Length: 128
Image 1 (cartoon, one colour):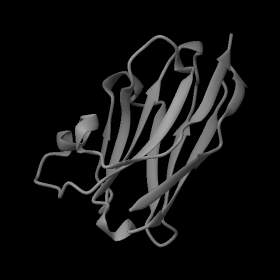
Image 2 (tube, rainbow, N blue to C red):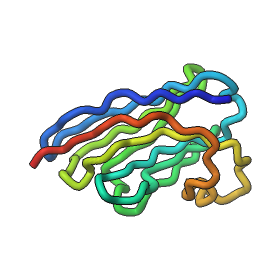
Image 3 (tube, rainbow, N blue to C red):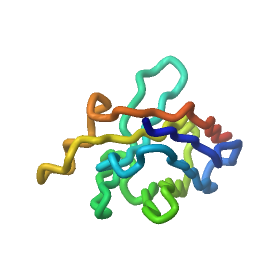
Image 4 (cartoon, rainbow, N blue to C red):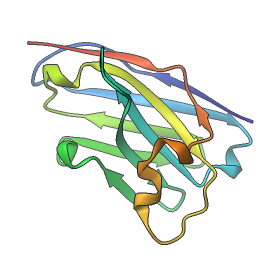
């Protein structure tokens, strides 16, 4: 089992920045990739970004250039740096771990179904 705990959410004004962290514990060696998803009120959960064990990254097209995912394998941490935040970025942000072995396509990690473990989420609210 892998346990994931997100932190770093909060309230920020539009144009501001936030950095989310995800601490992984347990059988972390089984995680081939880590991802961030978000769910806004009344909407379905959507993909934000993913990063493989070796550092390959994938972003939702609409978030490229504003969000950056990174990981520290030694510390079992994954981060999401969010810049130029907009009110529409308001959502609960979830960290997820996938044991699906990288097969040559980063798009493998776009879908929620490849993730085995999920955190409880952290609220991000962007005020206008």
